[in-house]
Structure formats: C-alpha cells, structure tokens
Amino acid sequence: MKTPRAIAGLFALVGLATGCATSYAERAPLSFQDYDYSSTEGQPWPLKRLALEDTAAAWRMPRAPEVAYVELNPEGGKTIVFIHGLGSYLKFWRYQLDAFAAQGYRVLAVDLPGYGKSDKPSSFPYTMEAMADAVRELVHKTGAQRPILAGHSMGGQTALSYAIRYPEELSALVLTSPAGFEKFGRREKAWFKRVFSTTLIKSSPEYNIWGSVRQNNFERWRPELDWLIEERVRVAKSPEFDAYAYANVRTVEGLSRNDFVRESLNQVGVPTLIVFGEDDRLIPNPFLHGGNARDIMSYGHANIRGSKLVGLERCGHTVQMDCPEEYNQQVLGFLKGLEAPSEGVAEDGESR
Image 1 (cartoon, rainbow, N blue to C red):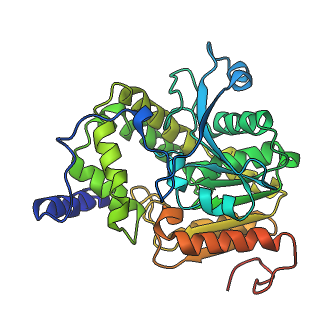
Image 2: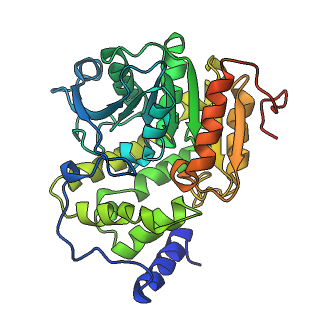
Image 3: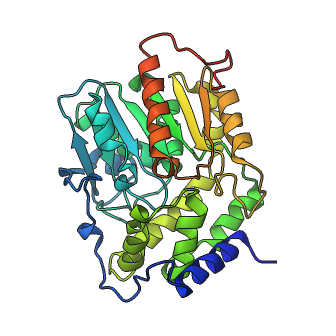
C-alpha cells in the first residue's frame, strides 16, 4: 500500500507530465538571500537583521547567530509578531503582514534560526524552547510591549513555549494550525528521528515537492502560489541548502519532543485563538496514527482556559495562505473582541 506522501507525489507527477504544472528543475540556482520579500502588490518589505547574543549565551553557542526580520508600521499601536512554520519563512505570512499593518498594528515577522534569510548554525538547538527564546530576544530588542504572537504550525508550538514560560510578557496568542497539541509516544518520537534525514530532504525530486507543498498543505491551490514550488526547487541547488536541511531535521526532532508544551497548556493565561483548516492533511500526523485535525485542536482548546476554536471549511494546513480572507477576518475579529465583549461565541469559546 502506498503512503499518502507517495500518492501525493503520483498526483504531482501526473500534473507535470500533462503540462498542468510548470517544471523549475532546469532553472538557475536560487540563494536564500535572493528570496523576494515583498507584498502581494510587489512592494518590497524593509528587511532588518538582529544578532541573538542573549539566546547564544543561554544555549552556549560559540557565536551569536543573526536573524532576519521585517517590521511594518513601526508607529502602530499593538504589536503582532508573526512566527512561521517548519520549512518555511516569514513570507508565508504574505497575506497578513500588510493587511494587519493597514489595520493599525505594528507588525514584526521573523525568519527563525535555520530558515529564510536568517543564519543556519549547526550549534543552534532547534528546540521550540530555543526558538521561543530567539523570538523573545527579538521582542525585547525591538521594544515591543506585551505583543500578540501569531504562530503557524511549528510557530504555534514556539508561541506556546513562550507563553507558558514567560506568561506576563504577552497579551494574546493566535495559534494557526499549531503543532504542540498532538501526543507522540516514545516509539513515534524514535520514528521521527529515524525517518527524517538531510539526505531525504536534499534528494527529494521536483514531483515530490509539488506533492508535499501543494497536496499536503493546501486545499485551494491557485497559480499565484506557484512561487512556493519554484523557490523550493531552485534553492535546493544552493550551497546553503545543506545547513537548511540540517535545521529541518533537528527541528522535526524538537517538534516531536512536545511533552512540556502539551502538559502545560493550562498555564497559558492570555486570550487565545486557535484557528485551523478542517481539511488539514498534516495534523494529526498521517503516517503514525491518522485522525482529523479538529480532534487535535479540540484538545488544545479544552486545555487552554477561555480559548476560542475556529475551524475553516475547505482549508488546509497552511490556512493563512490557503484561505487568507477568512483567516484574516477571524483573527481581526478576535483581536477587536479583546477590547469589547464578543458576540456569537459559545460559553466554551467555540465559534458556532
């Protein structure tokens, strides 16, 4: 029996063979530093860099890595920090950064260590606690006062680690298809460590990339998202890709060690929105135990006091890109509701 990943790869291969998808395999290599950081209208975002001296000291790194980040509307009111997921970077919030800045928020979006235009040091631990410390140092050094953290997938688990360990420093959480709620047994954690390797990531053919990105992450794929495939195919030829692949492998291991976050959800003390795609194909893990995303997200909802749970129909794992209008509407409504009593929400906080 073929695995879901193999089936996705076959669908993608058929698409390439019939001309339904563009092949980028013969195009020139692309450096991470050449990534296009711009709005949907093509307006370049101002990119900044920050050395993580405090994080390096805390985790005994020989050198402080630098992270890349974008800041929009620096004179805005409340700060929202956007934290990307595994294998991605800050541009995965392309449909949010300008939209939320236009609503008066100060917007920060970071490339976590190992991703995007940030440094990719082998000495970084790539645990969610270390990732949270990197975000916290960015928050402190940019002067953000009790920001809102919006984290997708891995970024959601990172945001949870931050909120649990430093409860007085945040004002709200927006957990977007978050990792951290799913339970992994000892053998399942060992499976992650055994299966994911730099060789697997580096040797993935183009049709598998189409399958993993398009089929596993999206329910409403559209041509304007093809840049996701092109970047991934072309950057694999970059000398920096080895370090990126290593970061992914270490991060997957860090994500699987989620017992601290999962068992400490009752310590989250800030208003929390959990928003996810009802057609998420990555959570829960389809290779280990299957199931449906709502069950996993409901666990988090039940254990985070006063949280609000919203499932978006016909939306996949990367819900903020798959269904940006619905996602933005839900998040903005939640944030505005923090300033006034909300309507249409049941006592358990679940959207009806």
